Length: 309
Image 1 (tube, rainbow, N blue to C red):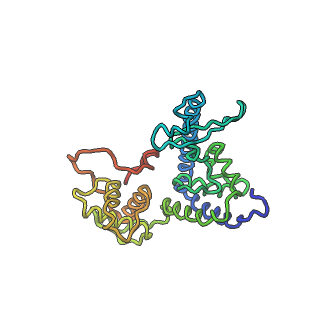
Image 2 (cartoon, helix red, strand yellow):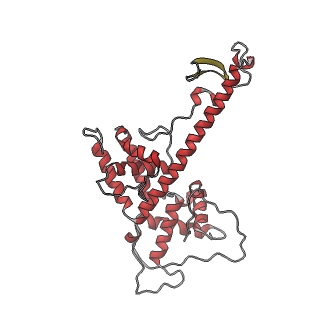
Image 3 (cartoon, rainbow, N blue to C red):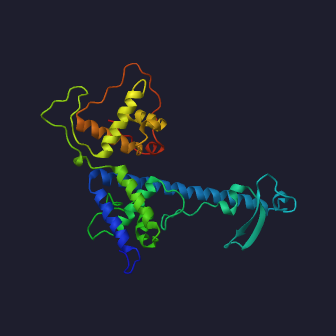
């Protein structure tokens, strides 16, 4: 738990409560755990990237240490354009000494990949998985005894790195709080309302074809479905999948100037919710149309695919 006197304890505890509300529905907890697992993959890739950069830099300065005059002669100028004069420090267990040499720009010390750390917030743009994981860590740090953490789906924390992140929550700065609130708003939009909050079709009316029930939908769901109908009206031929409609809307933003598309997963779920509430059956794929590669976002290529409804 947080130590007494933690300067932004109250602000973070309020965030933790908001995250707890998001994870209560099954869809919310599933989405959080899915993104924590994705974050673990991203963190591993980041470490591999830095290790590869260090290996290449060590190899380059090892060549310079062997006495390659094209690298160590400052007066002769760089052997290639854009190379920079840089210093490399050999540290124990070997003798500590410096090697100065011309260096490719990508291997210069100023280009060293930063350590993978999320607390305090880094200045770089964070991925969706990182945003989810930070919010989960805040919530798990404030858990009452006996409450199952978000990052513990099977009784075991999702890796040592996540457990360290939970413990590091007190290191957040006061200026991080507004940014964390923005992350919370993004996650809330991504998860969307729980299905139980959506009105169901009226049982007294049998749906026929595309006849729609008059129901009051959440604004986000109604807007998503209206955008889909715009795509369906203007695409020739009409979209076979919701993903196709989504990509068309992204390429034709002038058709939905007053509406901002959420991410693909959220939008397709909202469109499905609207169809179900209105009693509409999705059109079947047209016979004879050639099939091609699915157009999906980068995020979806690394996660299990969902039925577009």
